Length: 224
Image 1: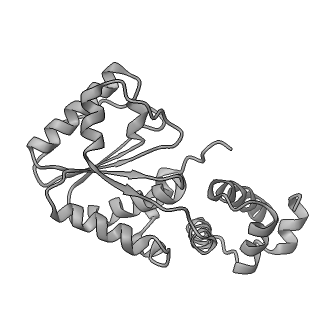
Image 2 (image 1 turned 90 degrees about the vertical axis):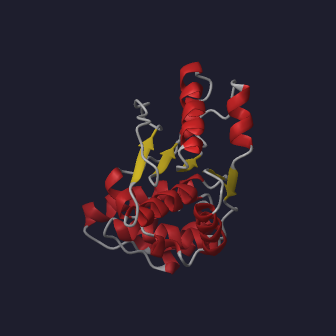
């Protein structure tokens, strides 16, 4: 399944409170807060749960952006010119940084960004994209990224997936009860990407039918 690309409007609406009930929330939040207080200047979000990781990445960006000046780049769809004219005290969030791998110019940009941010004591958050390349050709860049703080997201429990799906739908103005989600988990897939893809499909069906998402609706319009 191709990774779903979240709309910017939806990304802006994700808040930390939406994820507080997730089993990983406390540990990841503490690591990020300690990173901000510590000497490390680059933290890299890693893990197989790409959407869950991205949800937290955007939620933490939205949280910090209310108190600091944060700069956001997304490299998942296009490679913008990376403006290095940032000031001390600012925080950089770069989504899909690994899309610059396997490109001599792109890897040099990351290398320069690493050195510049370290020199200026600027905090940087990188979010790894599973859909992007993972092999680095520039040895110096590989060494610097390897020595940075790695924030690893665990495999999600079914309860975590329910929380994320419910909040995903809620932000789109839809409600799905736990019985419906349990039905999908048992009959469809436990993969979060698949669940989000199905949620988007059910969202469209719900809008067309002007009905809430229920088990009968799910059975009627899917093969479950």
